[in-house]
Amino acid sequence: EDQVTQSPEALRLQEGESSSLNCSYTVSGLRGLFWYRQDPGKGPEFLFTLYSAGEEKEKERLKATLTKKESFLHITAPKPEDSATYLCAVHPLSGNTPLVFGKGTRLSVIA
Amino acid sequence: DTGVSQDPRHKITKRGQNVTFRCDPISEHNRLYWYRQTLGQGPEFLTYFQNEAQLEKSRLLSDRFSAERPKGSFSTLEIQRTEQGDSAMYLCASSPGTGRMFFGEGSRLTVL
Image (cartoon, rainbow over all chains, first blue to last red; front, side):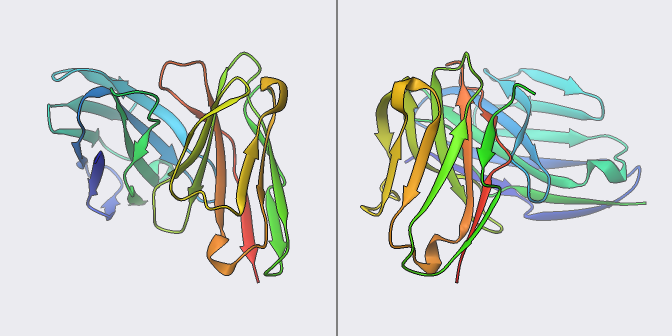
């Protein structure tokens, strides 16, 4: 069964304190790995797609990386507006299976 | 705005009542998905349409749930005889088939 595990469940950072979020996955074949940001009461907002091990994508203070078993979302010098839940999802290779999401990491950045 | 829109944004109902949610996808997207999300959890897949055909249904989708996408445009998700356990955020997403999903703001259901 396709599975996504995210850690930590919650993370509290001081403004400017860099850190990383982890996404471990088990999937029969990987078509792509997705990162989304979700603000309270809102729908998930797309951040990145990664397709193969070794790939990296960057956007402002965020950088996503991918290995064969996990992905990291690195946050450099975060600001309070980066506070949100970050969701990781895998798109399995087989059939029409849609995205399988992890439970997310709730990030709080304190000024 | 050409994003995914959902209606209503919030619905409070009494146990046993029927509720219906509507989703208008991005117009050029042929794939439409429904997910359910409860507090502290990630979105869980419910069902998926390609054009008007419903191609996948999760085991989570009990007999009380039904979804339609007439003419391959908007979609509706109906829950009959609601139960307190149905309280959740119902998310709709559309996709052009690349795997990337564009989500709406969600419809929050509270069953009293």
